[in-house]
Amino acid sequence: MSSAAVRVTDTSPRGKMIAGTLVIAYALLTMIPLVWIVATSFKSPPDSISYPPKVLFEPTLEGYVNLFTTRSRQTPEYIDSLGPPATWYDSLVRERNMVITGESRFAGRYMNSVIIGFGSTFLAVFLGTLAAYAFSRFRIPLRDDLLFFILSTRMMPPVAVAIPIYLMYRGLGLSDTHLGMILLYTAVNLSLSVWLLKGFVDEIPREYEEAAVVDGYTRFQAFIKVVLPQMRAGIAATAIFCLIFSWNEYAFALLLTSGTAQTAPPFIPIIIGEGGLDWPAVAAGTTLFLVPVVVFTVLLRRQLLRGITFGAVRR
Image (cartoon, rainbow, N blue to C red):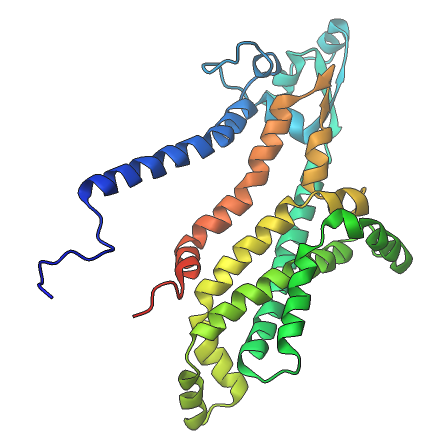
C-alpha cells in the first residue's frame, strides 16, 4: 500500500473543525447551569428572584453568610442599640434588619459528606480491587453467576430496598451513623467497582506476574509491585465514579439520616430564609458542594482519561 494512502480513521481538516466546534458548543451548553448557580450564590436575595433574570448585578457574599449562620429579624431600634457591627458579615446582615444568632448546621453536614463520601469510595475501591483481581486471575466456581449477581445489585432501584434497609438499620443501631452510611454506599458501589476493575486486570498480561514470581516474588508481592501500579488509571477512574455516586446520593441519606450523620444533599434544599427560600444561600451551598468532586476529578484527570480509554486501542 502506498505511503500516501489515506487510512479509514483519518479525518479531514474540515471534519476536525466541525467536531471541535460541536464539542466546544456542548461543553459550553452543559456549563450554563453551573455558571448560573455560581452567579446566583453571589447575588442578593432580591436579585436572585428578579424577573427578567439579572445577568449583570452587584456581587455580594450575603448568600455565603446566610449559609453558615442563623439569623433573626429585629426592629431598627434594637439593632441601633447594639452599637457598631463587629465584623463585615455583621454589617451585611444588619442591612436586612437582622442579627446573627449562631452558626448554621451546614458545616457539620458538609463534613459528614466528606467522611461518608471518601470513606465509602476508599472501601469500595479497595475491596473491588481485591475482588476484581481474584475473578480475573483465579478459577472460581460459578464465577459468571457470581459476577452477574454482583452486577444485579446495581440494577435494583433504591426505593425497592429503602424500607427493608431502614428496618434492618434501626434494628442494628446503624441508623443515622457514619458507619452505617459508609457500609451502605460501599455495598452499592462495590458492583461498579468490581466490574470496572476486572476489565483493567484482564488487560494486564499474566506474563508480568509470572516473570515476577520467577524472580522470587510471592503472588501478593507480584500483585503489589507489578499489577497494582498498572491499575492506577483504572483505580482513579473507578474512584471518581464511586465518589460521584456517594457524594450526590439523596434517597438513602434522606431516609436513614436526620441529624448526626446527615449529609449535605438532603440539607441544602431545606435552607429557609426570612420570608421563604433563600436562593443565594442554596446556590452557595451547591457551589461549595461541587468543589471537592471537581478538585478530585481535576487532580486525577490524566489517570481518568487513560482509565476510560484503557484497552480501547490494541496494537
